[in-house]
Length: 408
Ligand code: UD1
Image 1: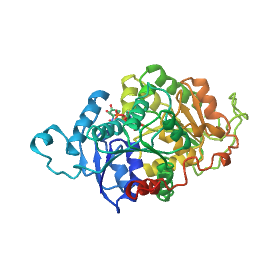
Image 2: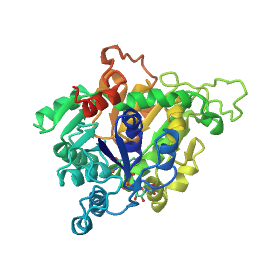
Image 3: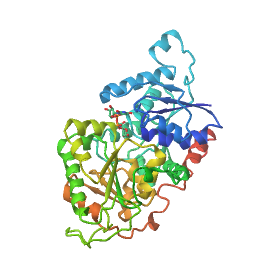
Image 4: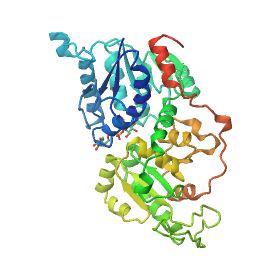
């Protein structure tokens, strides 16, 4: 049996890791990389750290307008599957990805949709890992990609009960399998390495004394006012925590000082400045620079802007952070799996389960709202009633068994 996985962006690679591991002994598993993410920190490091073999094919498509990017990817994937125009005229050259039994796609990126479309257009069965997620906000490219991919797919692997229900409600034609979420395995597996990561030392951070911040979505970064709000929010956090003890020498004993801040007593009291660690996406860096806001952000004493991190170091930061602040989809769930409160600066989320019990809070681009949520003390959060929302940590086995042995 030949199975082709089409991937292209960071969140695809993370989901590919456990699937490759569980499939590799049972079939010929070919990896096609569209080239959507191409920087070392956005691509190669994930293959290396998560022990995924180098892609068999890299289409090197890179970044352009969404329409052009998706069109180029469809054309490229179709050719690799042995159904391009040239292949139709000259005969299929019999490449490694040619004429597979199944194409696997992951998540909601442009590469996901392109892979599903190229396969489906040529009557190759498609399986979608992480099917059925909905934010019900069609302005998001990821929501459009999810809906279209689900309706092109023959096998729909839902990570949660809600996702499976969404698929039923939409009368999706594919077979729905509530597999649980492969991220549970990724987090468990990566943590074995993450616990030895030196990233805290390298960044001079102390556990629970920093916020982990990420932002990259087109809806967030597209307007000046949103990014200006972020700069002002972090400036306010600096002010609110600046008259506390500010030892940069981590070995010195902490001295608690009374803050004149309106948050004193009521809110977090670290006795230290609350650091903000920001592994920056290339898109966000470029836009911040074009708005003249990058220098302002770098100028803030409490903000550490760093290059995008690999999964191992990143997971360590998630686990050791006080709170996560993000517009990412996957990070909301990773924070939940690591039991770290998350503040999501978005109108909606596809990971609705994380909102239960207060683990994840949605908020708008309003400085006061974000500052309040960051500085609020963490209430005692309970997880008992939402146990195993994301499955039992064996999603990749369930997926393998259903593909290879026809179970489930
Ligand atoms: C993509 C996914 C998003 C996912 C994110 C994770 C889509 C529609 N979006 O968004 O769901 O959460 O990946 O990171 O597929 N760039 C680089 N170097 C790279 C990759 C990108 O500089 O290695 C720059 C490009 O110049 C581009 C911008 O980042 O202009 C955005 O890249 P793109 O692939 O369009 O989408 P992401 O924002 O990364």
